[in-house]
Image 1 (cartoon, rainbow, N blue to C red):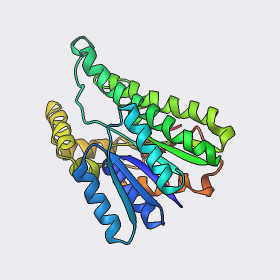
Image 2 (cartoon, helix red, strand yellow):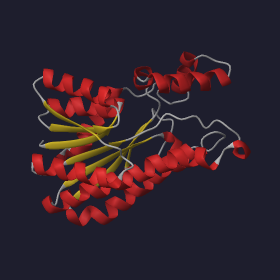
Image 3 (cartoon, rainbow, N blue to C red):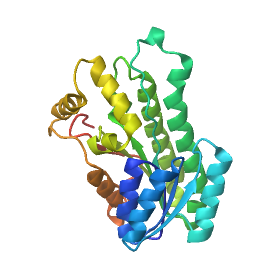
Image 4 (cartoon, one colour):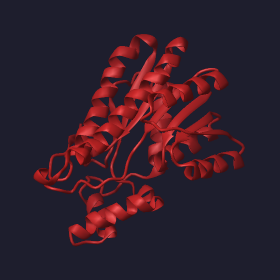
Length: 259
């Protein structure tokens, strides 16, 4: 494993640590320098190599410049992980939801996925190989009050992944989604996300723990995914063992969704 570029928080950090253990040089990109420094420190402490760059995933030029630098310093880009997410609360009736509130997740998820995928594909084409992974949630298939923006965003990323697979296969590039249910560890690690989930739970008249217990209980396996499971799934999808997988979704929802 040679070079790995990731953009994200808790999920990206977990994946980056595991890939570094496998010998990849990890390039971390995101807006939170403190979070990336903690991940990089863990990787270096274990003898791995990690690079940090503060990059706005919605800035096309910044994303392209970052991908160019990674390719130059690592001799190519072999895997990219789009694990870009925002903590937001849209639990409002359609009539009360502003255009800005609706567009917030849609723009963030779809624009960042497009820009990152476009930038790394440019370099992967030269090597005629590479894997682009995207992280989505079961909201891509859900229908109900409060989910419209997030649902459209995740469904759009999954559609984009399929289209990337169709276009880039001739260049030896695979595109796969990891669809993850709520991750208790990730929620607890981010105070802003935790606050929003607590707010949502309070609106339903329950605690955050009760919300997570209910979410786990709604799955066939009565469990929610862990960061370790997601990281190991990413490792498999990037391996030769998954060499025939593209344009599909690795569904880590505990059976909440079946497809």
